[in-house]
Length: 338
Image (cartoon, rainbow, N blue to C red; front, side, top):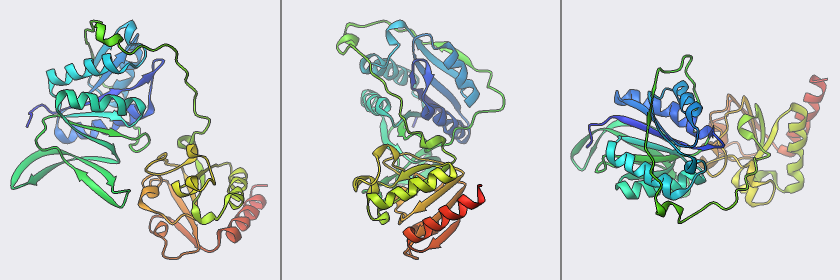
């Protein structure tokens, strides 16, 4: 087992702007580094990334490994994986974290394969613990926690034989927590020499469209499940959301049934949200959905089944028919908010 106690976070960026998931991972990486009594480092690859590198100090990075070159401006699998793979081989950090995005899911497996490291995808929690496995003690292993078998169990995965442990984490799962004062960190340039192989895949054109739905920023979310019955019934949630100034969301079952768009799906295979208020309507509360909303400040659940698992995580529960309860809520809010 490597004695190196560094935690690295790959900082994903577009047009010089860091992805939220990378800043969330820096916040989590800081806690992991404290548990290891180690050091948090950021890896930044791009062009003219000095200001972005400085921003990582606000989240606890003590050093930025910066590969800065005009040919690295946009993400390209081959040069990015080559740079990061060489860095990991040379420094052997204990932990390397990636966002569970299109870029992270493309990059992490290549780096893990090149460096023969352990990798777990789509983690929902990361912890440091001493583990006894097959009668052998492994100090300070990374516990990579994620739902498995369709979300029916929570699996804890370890990589005891791998000195470098890697994980991808979905956006919104970890909380973004900037420091009151930035760390006095250092920027270490990483030399990049263009290679002919880097141009085997070239970017001809780029088309990027920002999502029109931003559930993560919504302070109030009205969410519906399969228990809403049909697309027509689901429309009453839009009315409730309009009255109280919230966004509408849904479970995977509601999305699969065509009640709502996939962009508004909350849960393990959707978005993780932390609103001030989450109103769960006709949602049974399967573990896959709870993983995406259980950190809301206040949860109100409406369900006709008093045994529904959602009542185990909500702050206020209403047992009743959603099509009877929601119109009463709308009416009450209209009068109160006049």
